[in-house]
Amino acid sequence: MQRWRGLEDIPEDWGRSVVTIGSYDGVHRGHQLIMRHAVDRARELGVPAVVVTFDPHPSEVVRPGSHPPLLAPHHRRAELMAEQGVDAVLILPFTTEFSKLSPADFVVKVLVDKLHAKAVVEGPNFRFGHKAAGNVEFLAEQGKVYDFEVDVVDLYVSGEAGGGEPFSSTLTRRLVAEGDVEGAAEILGRPHRVEGVVVRGAQRGREMGFPTANVETLPHTAIPADGVYAGWLHVEGEAMPAAISVGTNPQFDGTERTVEAYAIDRVGLDLYGLHVAVDFLAFVRGQARFDTLDALLVQIGEDVKRCRELVGAAGSAE
Image: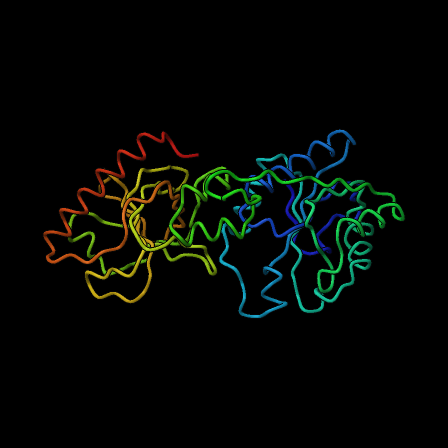
């Protein structure tokens, strides 16, 4: 899959294409539905399928300080888009100047002049351009002028976790923040993932016989509520069953939230400096402070046992 950053990266000889536009944070099941439709249309028309997305999130530019927690960094989104069959992803730097483009100018500068859109695929609530003034109806009108079709794809409605709401990144972020990683996975179509570099922590886990990878998460990452989770630790292509702790380590009067993953039944791992990923499968228990260190060690042993069972029952990670 081709990856471009900015309009200037698009090859000058780029021909017609099918395009879909959005932040697409998380590439959840609703996003996947739109992308698969775009890919199917592209195959029918014999042209590539392109996803247009933005960096940073538009809300951070329009309302500084309002950057939402992110469900996936751009490189991860690109991987997930490629799995849907997308041929190219264009990341547009979202600046104050760019935010002032009218919907009509956006259509001309991006869809017509650069991507030569033959069809555009969006969800029913898609908005674009200055002050989000553009919608799918306006897009369809522009399509008649500039010779591209507009397909509107209704999003599936989520099940029990979403209470009947359409699949959305906003709902997924809320579920993650509440620690409902199983509900989030229902929307994402896979476990929620957190990434970062392993850094040195207090090394108390090592001293207690449960060495953990202390993950320095990427900026604006959506981190689950404090507690213990079962999941996987991904290191250089290998997925290892893990017991994951999120929180401030109240047993030791900690103040900073950390994400730490213990690779179950693995010894001698040296992960410092490596970029790793942590997948959250299931919530095990909330964060707690124990009367004694021995009581904490007993609980950690129970946590690891429970995590081993949950991961074993779920099978291997992706």
